[in-house]
Image (cartoon, rainbow, N blue to C red):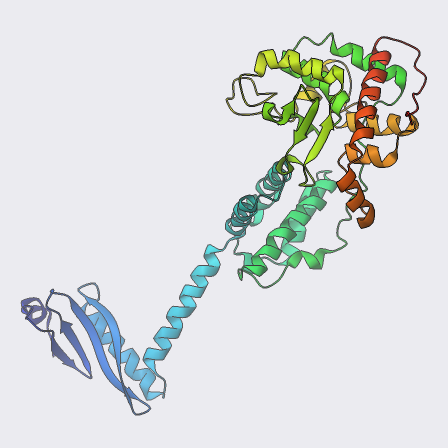
Length: 409
């Protein structure tokens, strides 16, 4: 039988040696001074060795207790080594499950999606906002495999009860994207949001507030000259109705994209919602506004840089806030509303609907038409249309009695 004194006095030798304690258990002393508890045993006529740990972390008394536990399992016909291995694997699996919390997985999904570069930055930002605002505080720390449909339902209902039904619906969609990605990555077994189908219906898209009455449009354009804020904001207000691109496409514009001599703005695919390059023919009025702005911001990359934030474009709320300062409520006019304004008036003015849709960079649902539209792009007709539209707006601004201008053949 071993004693602590005998163990401490044992000196390392050139080769490993054993100090027996009986019952198959011994202390293996290695040349480097390490002392390891081992137990040799037989199970189903096979000789095996069981490790109990390292002395003195595992004391002599601890090792003896582990030997008795192992002998008890052997008496029952069970293999202590196999059971120890299974317990270790179960513990590791439990640790992995605990590590894959909903927040951890969701952030991995966001990083994966960002690396792919196929998601618009605005969409990614909104998804992150919904996750951090509504889901992480309640289920972020929960292992993703343990979250139940009822648990997620209660979280979403909490959002809906604050009067944010559309937000609740979109939050469910974002959660579903996380769960489906987690399934493909082997981090969970199913998309639990499938059980919540019908809990919320995606609200019908609401048309962005926009002015379409010619007289009101004229008033709006005249108000831009009275704006007393930043010049870059005023320029954005003036340019928005002339190009009617999406607000994010406008505020993130870079000077390298513009050919002012050729009167063309080429927006790269990565900045477009539909991930396809887009061409905006520039009217003489748009070119004039851009030349004036170039004198102020042309030394940098961004056409509309944020004030005091190097390398950052103006905020997505800048144009909307400017409209509010000019007295237009959010139910009257928004930055996105310039697109609706142009689409409504140009269609009434008789311009080719396909040319209008292409200029709006809308997705074409008919594949045959899409192929033709993408190839031809109606660029010549769109160039005429954009100049006619700018002239029309200028007339409205000057207070002229404008008769809707039909497109020229």
